[in-house]
Image 1: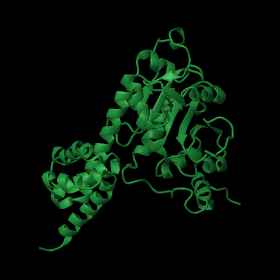
Image 2: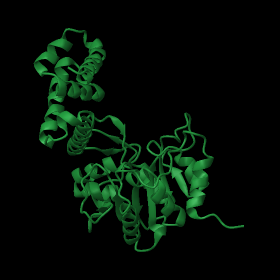
Image 3: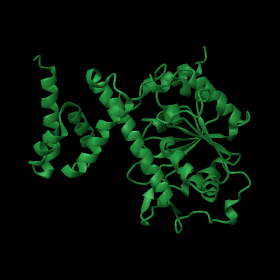
Image 4: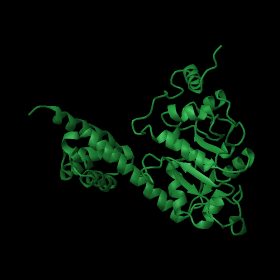
Length: 332
């Protein structure tokens, strides 16, 4: 009997899953050029100097549906960063440490998955699985500048980059610990160079955090600084604005298709400026308000919405958007 190829084994795992519990395998997402995958594999191989036992991955079940089942079916060594098997079951949203390596199943999964390459944080380190998991668990709960305890999503490429950029050399050394390098692909972040698929973050050289800063633990958690919070806030806002600009262009191709980035962004920023005056706080409402401002004068929009009670304004905003869209479609 012919042995199944890595691609066939992967297809079998996904095909056996209950409908809706795993994303479909694809030849490649539209926003991920196929050359990115072989380049990423080469970069991972170079980063671990050919010793793929040193290559791990941090994977987020909240962004990779069915992750635990995939890891079990493909016989990876893995563990949740959360402690024990507590209740409620958090396996569907937990971060997992995986000894990823570059075995055939890993290469097939990278090539065929819609989201794996863009959601994973790859880790290169000489230490063993248990030691590495223990290191990462020290950073799951951190404190902010108000001394509130927060879950920290350092395993998300969208968080890792801004966090490291805002960290001091000592904070970076403390976070890296035994890790030599992180690699990740953030689709919304401009590439470091046209020839690279992954952004690499190298450990600080010649700096020993243990001599200057105690390791975090349950009694003394890692503290995010004002610089961290400002960097993460700026990054979150920039991402929102990029998504909103792309959405408005798609929604209004005739009005905005040929407009510059600055012109489209101005609609988003006018909506952000007007929303607090109307007590609209949800990101969804700000985006709908931006749609309305593409179609109507702000001097008309504000009094139209302000006459309603604050709690009713999101509903009336949506109705106004739909009414203006219907008028656009109606021949004059």
